[in-house]
Length: 171
Image (tube, rainbow, N blue to C red; front, side, top):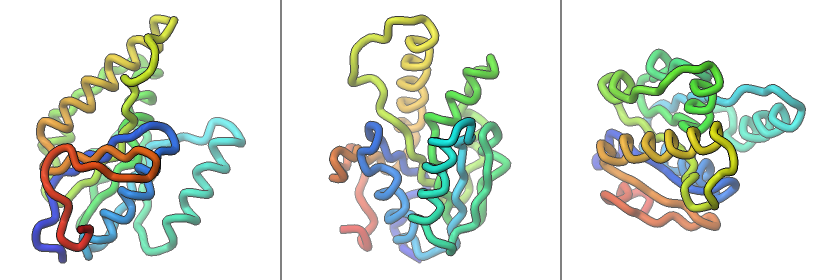
């Protein structure tokens, strides 16, 4: 096991920025059993194809748990990759529920790597639901980043450390 692997990591980035691929490499670097917590729901053919491609890209050496709502119950032994907090938040908002990170953060007792979209770099959305989502996403990212040992922003496939240090095996 990687000795200096952070307890909580947040990997941020835009759509198709390379954040999931980086988070998977980081999770593998821990040298521990791996759990992949999938928060996506396949409501259409495009999303079904995207989920299938992620499974192929990851390979078969992951314990995969589908948890669109309850990521606390899905946390595994070893290192857990939650991909992604953005869809987890969307699932809650669409069900009319708020997200409180208190239970999630308190439940972490082995390393967790969270993937999340940085949604605040674009224009102000033109409708109330989109503005509510953007605001909630920004707050969620801030809450996780405040507690995280490592925060990485991935842009164009290039990781930039914002807080903490990458494990030696990633340097």
